[in-house]
Every structure is written in C-alpha cells, then in structure tokens.
Image (cartoon, rainbow, N blue to C red; front, side):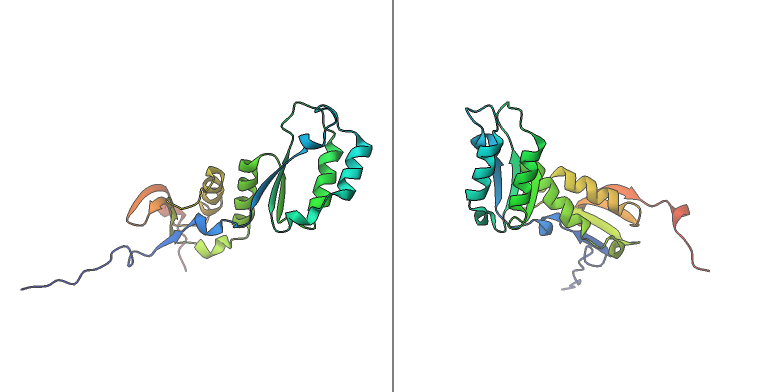
Length: 177
C-alpha cells in the first residue's frame, strides 16, 4: 500500500491569522441611565444631583465598563455627564457616552489601537471571521483600515476558506538594491 504524507497546506502557507475575539475585554458592561436622577422624570436639578454624586457608592463600578445615557426625552446639561465621568473615572475600566453598542465599539477600538500593526508588515493576513463573542463591525472596519497600508494581502474568514479583501499591487512591492 502506497501512503502519502498528509501536508497541512494552511500551516505552510505563511498566512497570519488575526482573531479579533482575542481583543475582547472580559469586564462587565454596565449602562448608567441618568433618567434615575431626573426630578419628575424631566429635569436634572443641580443641587440634588450633586448630593447624589457625593452619597453614591462609586466603587461598585470598579473594573467595569460603563456607558452613560439618558433614556428619557429630557434636557440634560453636558456638565452632568461630565460629572458622572469624573466620579466613574477612578473606578471604571472604560466610560463612554452612549449605549452598550457604543461601549463595545470603544473597547475594541482601544484594544486595536494597542496592537503593533508593524508586526503585520509584508505579511498575508486573514482576519478571523467566526468568534464566540460578538465582535462589532466597527472593529473589522478599523483593523482593515490599519492593516491595508502595511500588509501584502488581507483576507477575511478562516485560513482554509477566505474572502480576499486586498492584495498589494506588484508595482508597489519594493525591491532591495
């Protein structure tokens, strides 16, 4: 019986796999709705709000990721959100104005900004498509924007089945003298 050695062509292809799921911040996500601080559900009274800020236990947000919003149709002065950020800052991992989706966008954007993009220079990169956690589309857009100028090629999916996104033109490849 003639046996041929099985060769893993993906392993020998030189493709670098980038899994954005690995950038997921595991900290709890919390939505702080300032509506709970409104008087009669309509108005934010400065004196009452400042008293609340002094009495509230901000340590409960330690290590958490917080989105600040107001779900009521009320006029909330900008300084109120700023005061919340000042109170949360010593404790929270991340703070955004907006909803939980915006918070997730920020967490991934921050993680992507810490990557050393130069490590991917001249490489064939596949951005992994399947993950156990929800990776926001904004993260895929941002990593594509950052990788395109440096990579040889950019793909999406799995190394065995990719969707090509970009390939550096041959005329752009620099030669060594």
